Image 1: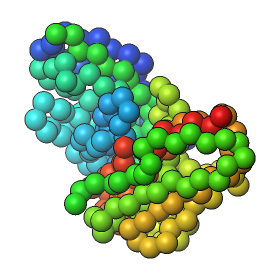
Image 2: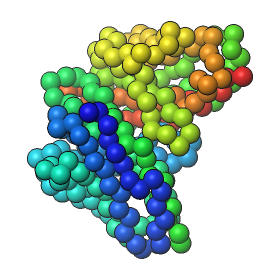
Image 3: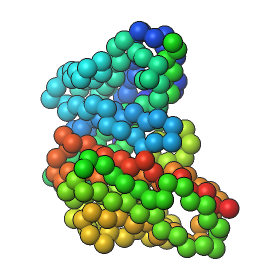
Image 4: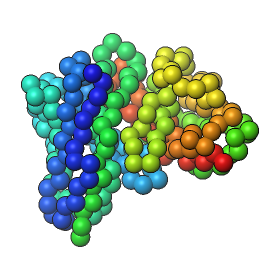
Length: 115
Length: 114
């Protein structure tokens, strides 16, 4: 019930292309869905996040699409750049009614953007 | 200050050593976390502190001992570790009761147990 499934495991995209990473979850109690970007030797950095009452959220070249009925959400990176090459993790949590919350992470996607 | 600072960045320790990892944040976050991350794997939650009290322990072996001396500091005391404990140890913090802010992670401590 706590699992978040992420695909693909790795992705190679040409510069200027669109990168798409997908995640699916089972626990309908999840109410917060962030995406993290992690470069080698660094900690994960929050990229963008969405709540289930919104179907899409866009920040610059990064867009989250959320499908509550299908229990799926995805990250789209438009005009992908070599500097976007990193590991991307989707995550989900239950954040209601508490001052802290546990993030359940997907297994990660290694994105390589070729110049 | 919007950072979580972890020290040391790298640590090599023998199986009989005692060492400590330190984490500091000055964002006023009242929840702090320890995660363990193996290569090419997602972070795995170890401990959660909320308002300086331990609220979640994910069945972590007792050779890992967390401590939260105040709202800005989080320590992880290490003793009698095993080589399989070698990993990147990440500290994170979050705004209390406000998921809009998400976690802020530190850059981690790369631990090698020899």
